[in-house]
Structure formats: structure tokens, C-alpha cells
Length: 332
Ligand code: TRP
Image (tube, rainbow, N blue to C red):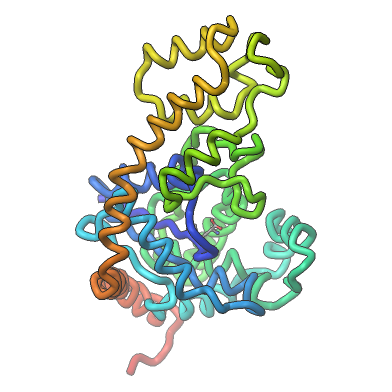
């Protein structure tokens, strides 16, 4: 059975973009793969080390979102990265053999240093972000890593690090399989202002938003900018509401009517949004009910994380003893 690893940083509640993109894929994989899904708190600290206050609370929120959308702790290991100490230990080992140049050339690194001007990211730790990520993946000898396009450069580095480790210590064999990026084709889920949905843009519909809050956000959402008046014909392909409609509306016939109604000015944006709101409510209601049920039982959440860390930890310990052997270290 193929093993899968993926992680998310606990920087706050997840939104419908995460749900439609990453999480749908994660849920599909859990039925026929051995899946490890981690709340990567050390990674969050790499950029937020100066302001760690909300880390614990955010980790719980993410877990609730995961459980809400249907990740099943009976099928996959759900755990917090820092609960499995081996992540940090393998990070140490891999950092020894990772050339500085690989990290300094990493396009994501260069981009973030420029984009996150309000944080001092010229640290030793932040430069090593992809090394910790490689450790996450290689610790479980994961074959597949379901991530978005933005993580491709990091994944390529993980493969290079695996290759270098195997070359140095594998004795012609392979200790770490090279992880494959399963680039999941994400549906386009724009935020309320039409830009990519993102918490930092303030345009996100959160998984945990109550239905009335979702409704309010959708009602004020931008539409095709060329359709100024109700009588102007619209162009669905230029409308962010249409992108959501395509994801949430399971009724093909109704979708067809909305699309042609928009083009002919037969229906207005308010009508279109009413349909969308109904479908979003229907889609989200069971997710939110599940989320609330877990939220009301803190002990159960902690049990899920403990059990996840135990299962992940068993695999991780086996990998680390191979690593210690490969490095010729004296075993206790
Ligand atoms: N860097 C990833 C992100 O920001 C999170 C992450 C950390 C991750 N470790 C990982 C993703 C390992 C996949 C595999 O989204």
C-alpha cells in the first residue's frame, strides 16, 4: 500500500479553498492509502516565532476543520508534528548534507523574504524550512505527497535530499524512496473579492463560518464586473460566483439554466447567488455539524491526536533507527 504524507501549518481556521482543494483529495486518499496528515507546528513557528501565542488554539481549529470535512482518525493518522520528536531529529540529520546553495536558491524562500517584510525571516531556522519538510515526508518514506502547485519547489528539494542521503549512505540501495508530488488539480475557488481565497486578503469563506455568515459573505461577493445592471448580460467565466457555483452546485440542469440565464440577462446576480447559498448551506451543514460535535469534546480531540502521534511515532522510530545505523552511530 502506498504511503501518503501531507501537512498544514496551524496559522488559523481553514477556508473553502482548502476544503475544495487539498482536503477533498486527502479524504479520497484515506480509503486506499496509508495516510499521515500532520499539523506542522514547527513550520508555523519558523515564520511566526516572534508571536507564537495562538499556536495551540490554531492547531485544534485545524483538527476540527479536518474532522469536519471527513478525515477519519480510524483511517489515517492525524497528529501534531511536534508530538513526534523524530521530525526534528531527522531534520538535524538531513541538514548536515543539504548544501546551502540549494536552500538559498529556493524560489519560495526568496519570495517569502520579500513578501513578508513585517517579519524578520533572515534566520537560520527559516532557511531550513524545506529541510524540515523533507524530514516530514521521508520519515514516513512517503510515496505520494498531495500538495498544491506552490509547494512544487519544496518537493523537488525533498527528492534531491533523499537522493543525496541514499547516495551517501544507501550502499547502492535506497533508504528513502523519492517522494512523488501528486499535483492535485484544484478547482478554482476565488474569495469574495474575486482574488484567490486567502485569509490574509480578508476574502475567505471559512469552513467554520455559520451558515448566516456564509450567506452574508456570498451576498456581497463580487460578480462579473462588466455586468453592472440587472439588464446587462453577464459572462459566467468572468464571474467568481460562477467558480463557486461549479463546485457547490451538484444540479447540472440548474447550472445550465444559471449559465444561460446569466448570458441572456434572464436571471440576475441575486437569483444566482440565492441558488449558490442554498447549495453551500446544504454542503456545509453536515460538515459543520460534525465539526461542532468534535468541538464539544476536547478530551476526544486530544485522544485523536495522541493516537495519531503514537501511530506516526511507531513508523518514525523505525526509520530513525535505520538512519542511526546508516550514519554509523552507536545505538544505546
Ligand atoms: N509547506 C507546506 C505548506 O505551507 C506545509 C508542509 C510542511 C507540508 N511539511 C509538509 C506539506 C510536508 C506537504 C508535506 O502548505
